[in-house]
Image 1 (spheres, rainbow, N blue to C red):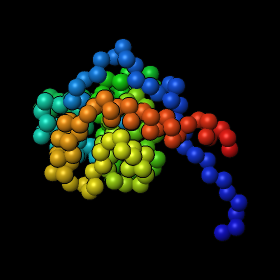
Image 2 (spheres, rainbow, N blue to C red):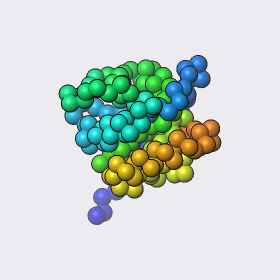
Image 3 (cartoon, one colour):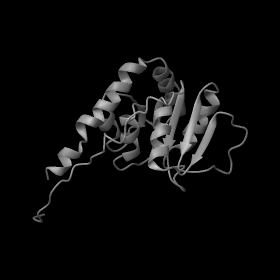
Length: 182
């Protein structure tokens, strides 16, 4: 291939996407963001399994209002479609961010959440593990028992260290300045 090309790096606005310290953080809270029709590809089925295994945790789902077959779950909260401001508040409220995708592009919502100091828990697809580095947890294969163990590890981790690593990882690696230089 001789066609000229230029790589344009991904970038996230770390000035906007930051934790709002006025918002109190829910301990043992998990968030995922998905669009209509993306429940299976984004791993919502695994999150529902987690909600069963961790009844003392809260699971927030942004982007959709509900799913039809979900009944009698007191710890899953559907937030619907949110504005960027509302989403930033929800990231600030949540302690962990779940990106349990079967397939994924870059993971913009993951980076936004990390900038708001959510600790990432991701599936081992595409570049997700590269994005988080050592700031979170990687589910090596789609297995609910492995995920259960991973969540226990996350809940026992040093939250303050990982929150800072999470923000710094994205802030340092995906800057608007890098993108502007091209």
